[in-house]
Length: 201
Image 1: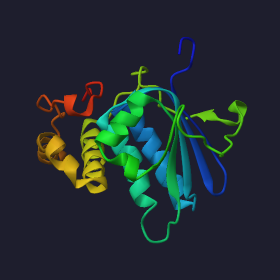
Image 2 (image 1 turned 30 degrees about the vertical axis):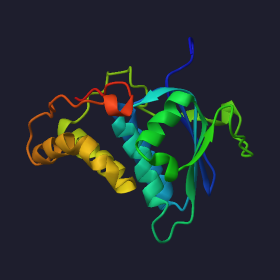
Image 3 (image 1 turned 180 degrees about the horizontal axis):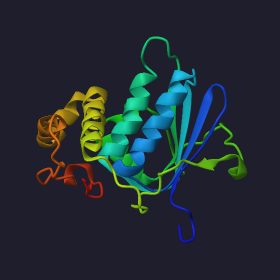
Image 4 (image 1 turned 90 degrees about the vertical axis):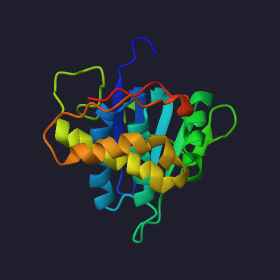
């Protein structure tokens, strides 16, 4: 991964969306990904291909963004699916722990073979504000709380067994959504996910 530009690069056609994640998927770069995905869903794109070949890990908010895309593609008027390819053993464990392997079409490195051809690297463009290391642009605290709440609600909708895992966090965020105080949630144990500890604003 040394020398690799971190962030999310994207490419789309009239029906397909291609996403490549380099580095970590977090609540920070999950916001621009959600905006991009919702825009293209509105245009009628119904097949999403997410390449995790260079992804070092994902926090629960980012996974909730992916779950939200998958749930939207299951709604009336959509007939597509989200395909997660080049998934490492660590990342498949994250998906399985949250039941997302049943929502997504998952391709595991060394186990499955994908017949889908990704566009060439030069056809991808970096999604603005998708490098989680670049903190030059401050996040709106209230919007971030709303965004995180939506993402974790998506995880519960995707698999109700996730509700106990995030009940303290979602309760706190629901309380904070209506006020102007920056969210500083209580410590939430992510060890049940075997995931890197999520950092909240």
